[in-house]
Length: 303
Image (tube, rainbow, N blue to C red; front, side, top):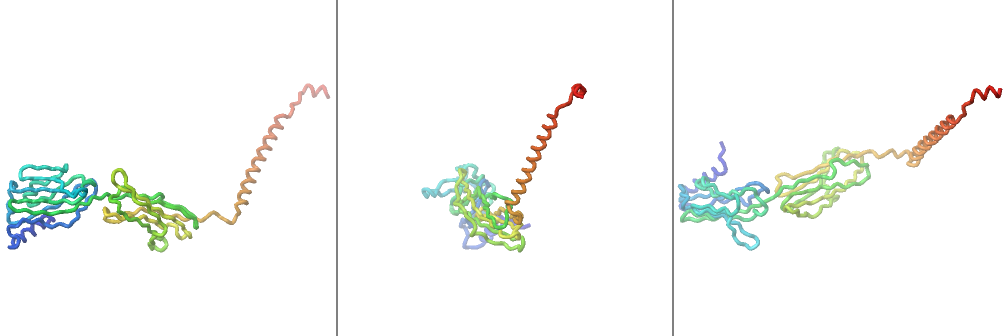
């Protein structure tokens, strides 16, 4: 079974304990920074430590204080504090499990991350009489969603239409959008940056951003039927690029061999003929209905 990252850190710590240069000195493992988290998720800010004096911990001599730097006034705000006895979680829901602390792990758990949680955090650790400090930066992101105004675009060769890509719900506002087209005939993908226009991101009330990008589409031949166009979004919250697609359907234009005036005349002539036939039918009906009925009595007298 492969060891977990926490177990690996403890193994490294034991190796370092065997080196005379680290004997008796409290140290915190250095972690890659920043730590990235998605809005609404939980996150753990690492603070794992080692040293000869902490092989058998007594929590009564341990102090853990987590602070967050305020960018507005460059001061430190307490997020979580354990003084060896009492716990003060100034940030609601924050905690350092005591069982993990006994295992030389003072990592801070923060649930339901919000944009306001982003910033630089510092772990202040005391195992009497030793002290150690380690800082880590937390970045909070929200993943974008996207949709296009048309999932299938039907056009004639030589005509022009626009398709809009709507990108919503992302944070921060640094986003890149570009368009590509995959030709069905050649399986080659082309960049379409010269035909696009992208707006400036606008912030919504929930702190996320939205942006639109418009693509102009002008098919030239019927061979472009079935080509797939993609709006591609790049954002730090995404592992892979986000894409929204639509398919181009190119149709043959109406038969231009018959002049429009001829078509119109034919239709008009047909309608006119129907009207004339209707009028004649009404006249005939009225004439037949108005024919007098001969009285047999009067007929005999006249004869």
